[in-house]
Image 1 (cartoon, rainbow, N blue to C red):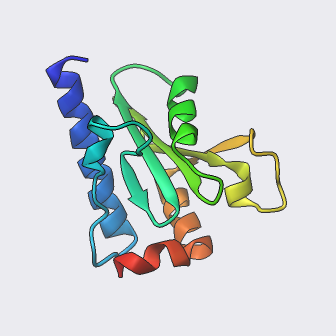
Image 2 (cartoon, helix red, strand yellow):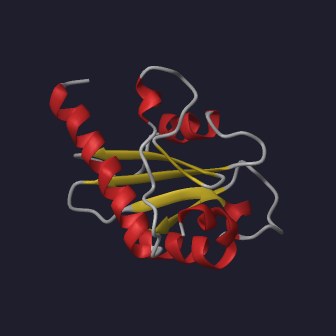
Length: 135
């Protein structure tokens, strides 16, 4: 990974952290997990039980399956994975398991991609407990 790619990744993580704080009206910021660079099994960001992996790339339409596998790999049974991704000139998207959107849908292999506003709405309406430590 080149220095420019690493900087782009760090900048995107910081941007998502700020957007979470602003859009969810959090008083305490969502901090980047800096130990992710020294140790395995850490997400880029953590918000309550949510593990967020952030990816920003120049070209593409669909996220790489390895990105989803990466965030699922750091997510314990009682937590939720979220892949936040963006390609240049495209809006931010968030991939989550369909069971996080509707608990009646129990197949953990099925996913849904949400726009940013829909993901924030999901957090505000169904996952208030995960936001409490940031108020």
